[in-house]
Image 1: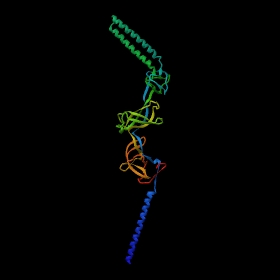
Image 2: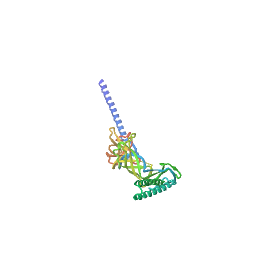
Image 3: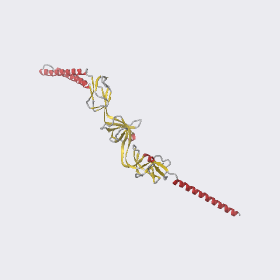
Image 4: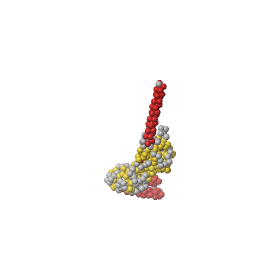
Length: 359
């Protein structure tokens, strides 16, 4: 009787174990079925982009102000009353053009008097030379007459210079950017009268981090964009690189020459762009936000391939900061759909659907 009870107990235990195992298998199968056919990651068109072949410009970002390359401060040469002003702000002038005139009531008579004194001294000197030849005067008398002539010539030159300076003329061609006087104003020697600029060539000053100094050289191409300008873009060349680093910012000042022969730009405009260090033609590129890094720092991208998420290890090259694109030198051929932005919750092998037009 006991033997039958033991056999029955063993059989019941075996049956219970079989039931537990079958239930575990069904639960596992249900979990796998949910993973395979249940959740589908949905992405919008803004979450993906195509790897494409494009031309890239890698360089140092810069920003600053476009200023006239020529700025001339025209100051008063004499203390006098301004009798007339001939130009206005914004007016184009040519070299030698009269801009203003001072009163000449004092300097004109002085110039005429100095001229008369010079003529008299010249006549005396000539007479002394003739008398010396005849033996009527000494060599010293001739020398004194010559000294008087040279002094009279100097006085005449100074008087004529003041008379000439009574008319203020443009030292070069350009545009009057500032007019500081009006007719009737009394000015002192050195007071500002006008500011003249020439905008046919502009200068762009910017700073770059000191680690780029070895790559930035005179003649390097610079691509700029001006806010509000109708031009598609501006280009210039590095003309000067400062020889010292700013101790506070660790930045180096760079000066760029930009042609403005068409006169479309004015001084003072804000511009931004980059100093081109490298240009890559026909590179396979993806947005910067598509590049990810694993725990070991190895770069990779997530792609949409056959309705599932896949991982592609990549090698990167040039970065176009302005276009926000990164060159992929290996790992992609071009045309692949890459996933942008954070990868939270995204794993290779997950099913994925792109809504809104991409697929």
